Image 1: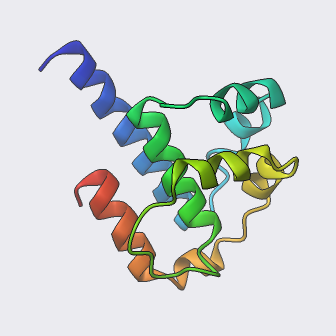
Image 2: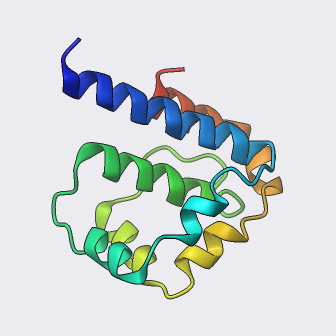
Length: 120
């Protein structure tokens, strides 16, 4: 397997583990989120063609954040919609304070993210 493929697989496994932890209501991502700066979020937001792993991670993130409003997505959010969400001053706070119950109540969403982004 090429180095890039191994790196992508490692990222995929880490994100999947974080999603599993989130679904259980665990604090696994809190420390990492607390170190993200507004400048880093702005840098990501300004990307016109983000790397696939960045785009797909943020697609899954936005889908999860919207679980209560859209528990059965048929497509990932468009990049422009993700950029708008990243521009919100409360974005990191929304992640840190995420209430997991809407995700638990959205098995179609969980299956969509798991199959699309993790081949499960």
